[in-house]
Length: 113
Length: 165
Image (cartoon, rainbow over all chains, first blue to last red; front, side, top):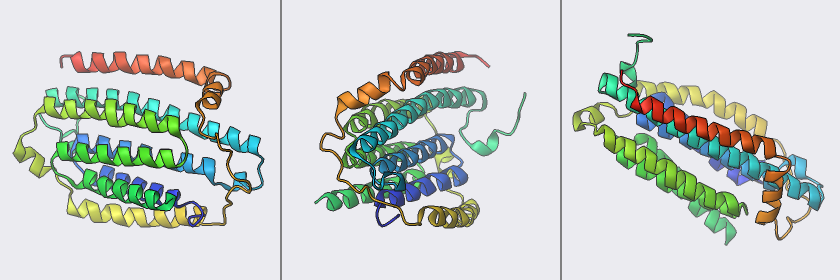
């Protein structure tokens, strides 16, 4: 499938880069950016499946059109939810920075104080 | 021609993504992410998703990244702190070790024989009217729920950022 759909390889590598970023970075802002990167990798995979997927083999024009629209709508929703996530996430970063004067993830250890 | 564009955009996206997670300065990371998102928007266009190409540029590379840059500049991090917050070597090795099984599993799942569509895609596949019709008929309820979610997120962000601790 990777040879027929090279977008999947790009999507996989982008997702892994984002994943490694989330796991290794201690800067809260960069971790948020890495999460955005992973969401985009998933979007790319979604869209590539609208053009090349086992479900499309032998499908007629109508099915193809319908699957294309479904994939597009899902990606549209993901983008909108990611925008909401970014807004709330950044507001939390600002609130945390006001309290602790740092964006170092290792410093945010307390649940309550 | 199409594959040249694809590889160019992919290479740009991947290099910019690596820069995003490795830069110490969050501003350079954010600007690399903008480049990466624009390249991904280009990949969307090569998949004939013209609407999402524009949305990706407007919402992601535009609105979200401006918000991120704005917050970075508001926080006004000191140099000393940024240097301390680079990538940590032991964690990097652990993350690579954790990523290897994930790659193996994903490659095994997706590496099977898939199929390209047997017929060529219709010429007007990326046409906006069809997409709009899907969005406002079959997906009308999720669409309306989404607008409520965005409103809730907006109010939540304002309340969180204004609150005094």
